[in-house]
Image (tube, rainbow, N blue to C red; front, side, top):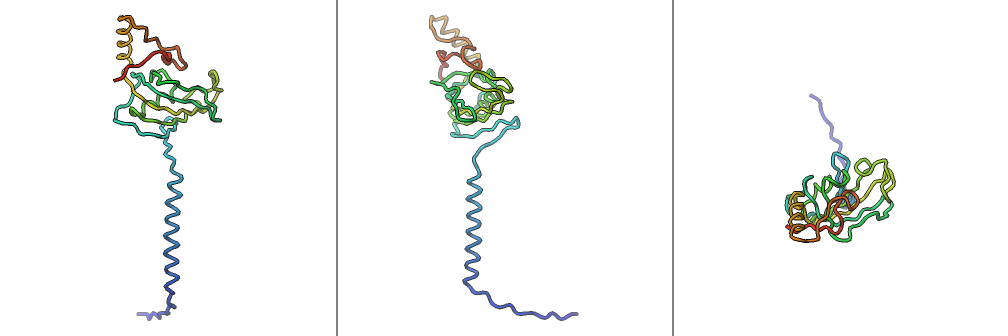
Length: 188
């Protein structure tokens, strides 16, 4: 067996230990604060659509390609220029919109407010479209007011026309294949 010789350590002052623990606690608090500051809540789908939930909405039902969504929206270019804005809740066929907008709508429950960042490949791509330059990343703030199946909406519009109403209208009057602003979507 070998003999181990112990070398005594000088005692550490209590004040040094207090400062050490305070420094570690401060570093931990600063790390948590930095982590929270970096959490913007922006998520991305596998296709590359980026979105942020501004208000979560209610329920679990979400629109599908077979639905018409009643939305308030504002569309902006990357420099902040507004290129389109709804003046009132606007009915939009989910499947009739650009790919990124349609995908985003299908993420939203009724009453939700989301912000979408739509890359060119999910928007208009290499083609300019009115005030939207080619290869533009688009930002949309969208509020999903309500949605219902497109077949139900068409049946209600036909019924209204048969009863002599002037409402209704065919898709295609507004940009993106949306129904004209005069067309109203009945509540659920």
